[in-house]
Every structure is written in structure tokens, then in C-alpha cells.
Amino acid sequence: MGLADGQEKNAMAGHSKWANIQHRKGRQDEKRGKAWTRVIREIMVAARTGGGDPSANPRLRLAIDKAKAVNLPADTVKRNIDKATGNLEGVNYEEIRYEGYGLAGAAIIVDCMTDNRVRTVADVRHAFSKHGGNMGTEGSVAFQFKHCGQMVFAPGTSEDKVMEIALEAGAEDVITDDDGAIEVLTAPADFEAVRDALQAAGLAPEVAEVTMRAENTVAVTGDDAVRMQKLLDALEDLDDVQEVYHNAEIGE
Image (cartoon, rainbow, N blue to C red; front, side, top):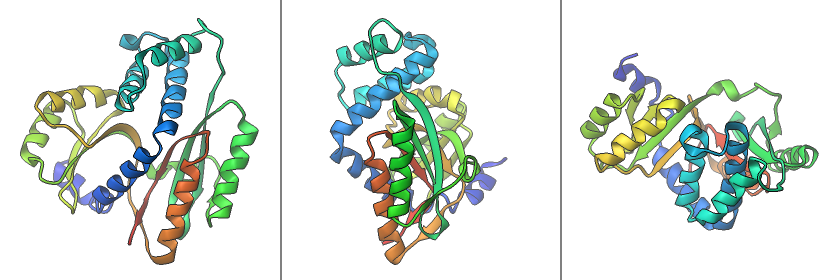
């Protein structure tokens, strides 16, 4: 697929990424304490499933990067790796994904880590129903998202420079959104190499993560937009929720 095709195909998905990202970052900054809890769980599950050596466990490396980004102390990181790999007594978390619909038929994926599946499903279902959404069955919306590495650069970043370095380092696509933000997409396994190449060239992304990226967006406006934001906030505020992905483009 040529870049032009990619730009055309993703024109919808990239429409107002920047505004949505700024909103999300603001929300995340408000919830610093919760960020620590989420990162600790991610470290524990990554270490339990792939071993406690970061050099041999890409998922654990990314979790440790997240820990540094939220200033989680290094000894806390080590202690939780030890817990997860059986060197210390710890809680056993399992990963569960729920899928559902928000306002205007927008698709939502809710990734959880929990030590009590019954509590979690009740909490997630309650948040959906209280705010005008509904839970779907497994596989009902996941096909509308692509599992990929994503980096987003602020409007004003040199598109030529990003494109040249990203594609050479193995990126799948480089997209310039309507608002001037530049998005770099990679296969999940290539994410670190591409991110490191861009950073080495002095290009620091505002967002850099392996994510579930919506293939197309659904415009949600007016009262629905307000209710949709409340639904997303309610899901994100649940203790067992790690990530909420959606394809809503929330208008003013």
C-alpha cells in the first residue's frame, strides 16, 4: 500500500487526533496516583507472562518505559517484577478485554487487569448502562481497531524528516492529520526500533505507545458528545481498567 492510499484511507481516523490527544493527556495528568497502579499491574503481568529480564521481554521494557514516564521509583519496579516472577508473594492479575458501544454506535474496547473477574465485569457493565452505552459480546467491535505501534508528533514537526527516518526504521505508515499532527504507525514488534530512531534524530513524540487504533472514526456531537465523554471517563475511573480505546470523534 502506498502512502497516498494510506493517507486517504486514514483521513477520517486522523481528523482531529490532536484535540483528542490533548484531552486525554490532561485527564491522565489529573490521575497520577492511578497511573502508578496501572503501570505496576502492567509490569506484573508482563513479567509473569514473559519473564523478569527486560532485555528478553519487549512488553516488560515498554512497561518500564511507562513507569519512568510517570516517575515510578526504580525499587518499586524491581519489587513488582520480583512479585510477578515468584520471588516475592503477590497478587495474581489476569487480563480481560470487554467490548461495547457508546453513544451514536461508537465502538469501545476496555482492557482490564483484575484479581476478581466477577467484580470487574459488573463494574464495566454498570458504567456502560448508566451512561447510555451497552456491553457487546467478544469480537463485536475489536475488528474495527488495529493493534499497532503509534507515535504522534505535534503540528509543526517536519513531516519530511519524520517520514524519512520512520520509514527507514521500519514504520508501516506516516499520516499527516487535518490539524497538522503527524502520526507514525508500526507493527507492534517494530515499535521500539522506530521510536528509538526518531528520538535519536531529536524527534520526540507527544504520544508513543502500542495501542488499539480505530480504523475509522464515528462523529459524536451535541448532547451525545457530552454523554460519551462521561461514559469514557466512568470507564477510565474504574480501578481494574488499564486502557480504554474508542473510535468516537467527540465534537464540541
